[in-house]
Image (cartoon, rainbow, N blue to C red; front, side, top):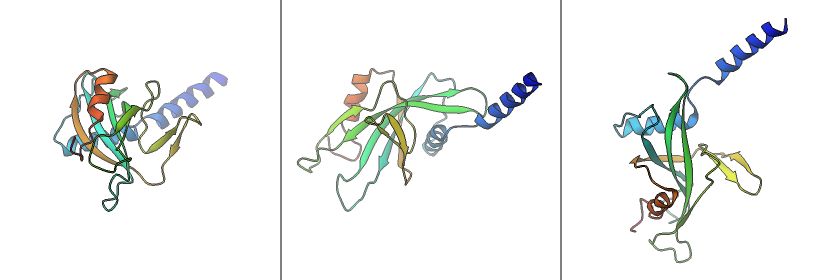
Amino acid sequence: MIPLFLVILLFFTHFAAAGHTENFRIVKALAENAGVDLDLTGRQSYAIYEIQGKNSWIPHDYHMRLINGRVSCFGPDNCDFVGNAFHMAPNVKYRINTCGKNRQQSRNRPWKANTYYSEKADTDFELGTPNKHKWAGLTKDLTYEQIQEIAACMPDMNC
């Protein structure tokens, strides 16, 4: 009786877990809009920008992260985009179009779309409003330091 219960439980757990993740759906839609076919083997890496709270009437009043990662598939309908987030902060001291500073969210904690990671609480919090995402493009196999150099210049600033 117990083995049958375990088989049924495993079947429904797999069924419930199957499907593309929100991360993958976001990146796939951005890639399609850019005319890019994603490499589902995980060999090619990609980058996107994640923007929260950008107001056109208040310069620099937003939060942006550069997300760099790869597609990871476990079946034809079960793919994820596993990436690292790099926080990009504008130079708010002078409020001028100069490069700010950036830092990596965590090398050990992958990016989750539309969440905010609190280092103090060591947990992800869902955001009330979904972030905006922008395609950044294909990336090379870079070190963390090289990625941070690229992230230092935001796409809408004159760096």
